[in-house]
Image (cartoon, rainbow, N blue to C red):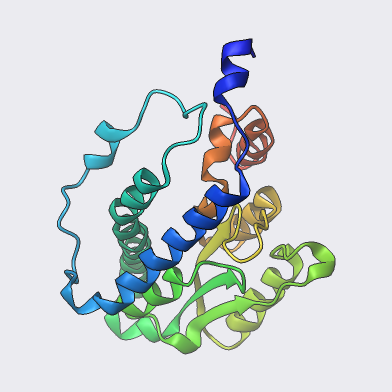
Length: 226
């Protein structure tokens, strides 16, 4: 890093931190105060985000206002993506099971650290709330989703004549930043033929960093060799 770069890359000072923290709180408060004014459905076109992405991640911090504006554009996509992937998994399973009357048998799995959007999305596609398994995590194992606990939950549901459908594994959970053991969870999902969805959450920026090789390596373990 050259001297010019060092001059531009300044740490966050306490005054800026305080002001921007207040701006975020105001942003949230304004949303709740005016929630009735916002559209229920997204008004953006599919594929719009690809054209907006830069060629590389920014080296210097962006203004908070730009980040908050991006949040409005991305928030809709999170829920829509969850609904779409769950609906696709649901339709495939119901076709194999023989009809919609079997929807009450389908079960979705996630950790208790998973972003709440997936619970809402499961309801929207018709999965009974009682069939959404939030597997408990603990501080002692860094709030990771345990493959052993997942396997036990799946086996218990099968004994109850339910149909394991979908697993959401999160890389960087919103509450704790926990990174799921993708390779191990993937093997469990493959063994029981679950639909495996990997939610980036807080770690979506990791793909821009050299350390992302660890995550990509775990994912490669699930990919059959040629």
